[in-house]
Length: 147
Image 1: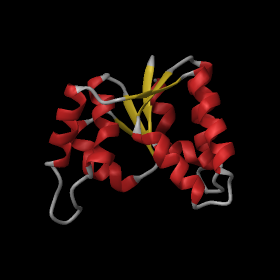
Image 2: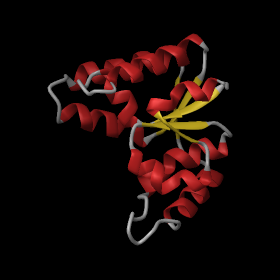
Image 3: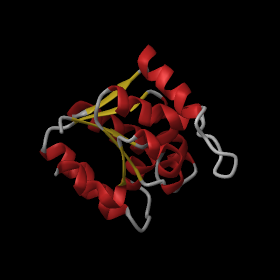
Image 4: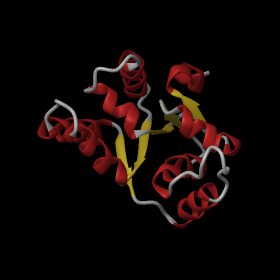
């Protein structure tokens, strides 16, 4: 695997004290070791900074962390037309009971699909809404991406 799409909630675990924080650290370390290009939509920056703003972690330090990762293997990208169209398709495939994915949420798996790689998220609801499209892996199963 040369590429992966990383959910903002996974990256945020680097500075949030959550139960699966160690898994996120191990994943990001492995992505770096393997020189994997990590793709994220441009909204990733705003999501991660917003998460920091509501936590006890410094927004300045969060931005520095993003910039540091960007200098290594993080690519913040604008969605191109194929990714936008795929995100729209994903938004339209929701279910009355589980809900419909927002365009913001759909942009992550759309990016993974159009770049033929895996989207890694810690959000089980996100997986439930997009699993039919493939290209999505739960954080707790991240090692399967490299097999």
